[in-house]
Length: 171
Image (cartoon, rainbow, N blue to C red):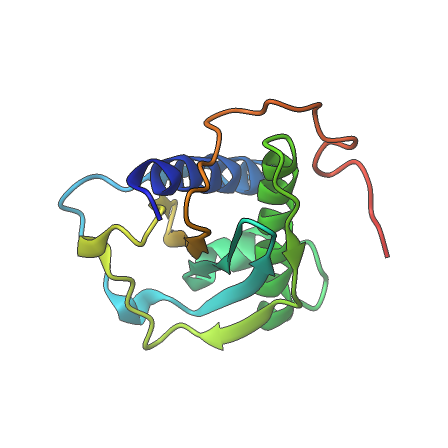
């Protein structure tokens, strides 16, 4: 994977994560440098795999309890179901953006894992972004491989996605 591909993908994932949580009325901020985060703080992480002709990998979204509870619209919230839904929605947003760049992504079913032993390797830049919210933390990254020679365009070269995020439900 080229460094340029990784930078473009990290930026895309981070921007869409900010927008996703904003749509659920939770303002998350990029973590201040030097503000350490303990791995034990994460409640759950949602993981959703994907593939395309040019790349393959997984998107990981981890949060503490507060962001999950504050964004979940369900009367009887299941934290596991909600983190999976958030990961699914986030990959859907990224998928729309990738489609505009000529990359069609196919997603798997999301899964949830307990976050108590989750420890993103911050030194290796696998993490797209670590965000803080009022009373919580959100961490997102996309671990992926690109086919040799593939260059991910920085912006969309094709038509915009047919439907904006949040405007349609498909079953």
